[in-house]
Length: 432
Image (cartoon, rainbow, N blue to C red; front, side):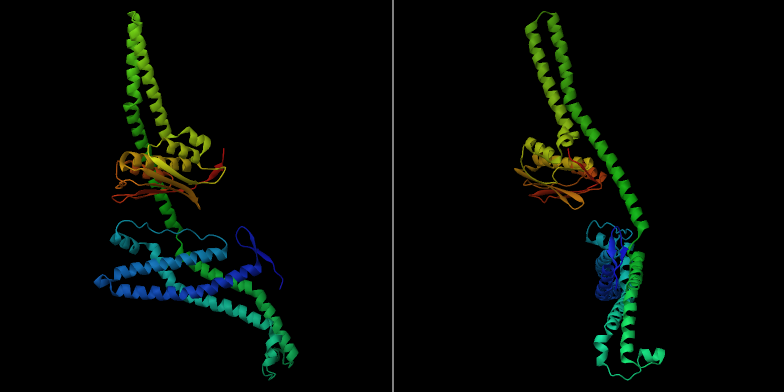
């Protein structure tokens, strides 16, 4: 049989290879169908029957969780055999205590769709398995008729005699061989049809593009609000820091210069020289504070030399000993928003360790993990840190939300405190 090629996604896949994948898809589908169906029906029956005594709630929640696991396997296997992604789906976020998480799981429409799929897909998977395997095995068997038909008793009433009335063992075997070739030539079409049926069911029940789009819109709205809050907090902090630091020193500098001018007018250069010296000291301190504030906004070294160099500079300024573990691509710059957010996570963690944790060592680990950047700041301080309204960690969580990142804080009393930030990689830019 001559191999041709067919497009399966962005690259061409040989027809025989695609048919083999589809056959494997239906064979493995049967082995997934049985446990999925048994667990789904048994869990649903037991859970529904014991709802009156409340035992059914955790049983149903566990059944939905198992159905989700099987649904994820079905999505991955279907995407692999199709060579393209299925439409998106959406699960509700689980948060809070055990009771709240259980209730959220029971109220999730997609989990119930997963459960329905586990039940409905059982007869569909059996049908596609039987048709696909029978068709391929029958085709191979007919193709190899010359190897096995000699062992059968020759009563003369074979397929050739039924069609033409002719009795001939050689022609009978030849007819079966030709029939095997035809069946195998049609096998890719049959396998594709069975795949389309099963994939169509998965797409109908295991995806929900409208719900995913609504969730995405809600997430973007939340990110927008977080961005506004983070910007407002940054502006308030800058206003307070400038008022308490450089502004006061500049006022004092003005007063000293005015006093020096009066001394010069009074022909008292010695006192004027002392006042000018104090004014110079205040100007230097104001300049130092302004530089520190500019580093808190966006340090030039971050834009010029990248995240690794900026973190090394931040570690050198820290009053607490810092151990850096940075694993980033060489000569490749991350997106500006990613680098800036990661820098703020580290600097905020170092500041908290120095001001509140009474730590002696801070370990900073930064690495790329697939399509996200993982940033972890760990100190050996007293612990007790939390994301509370008005605290620095709350502002940091808002800043991460603007890039659709997430912050996890683990800080039991007595320590250690571990800040873990996950920042999606929105893109890569050329290194400087």
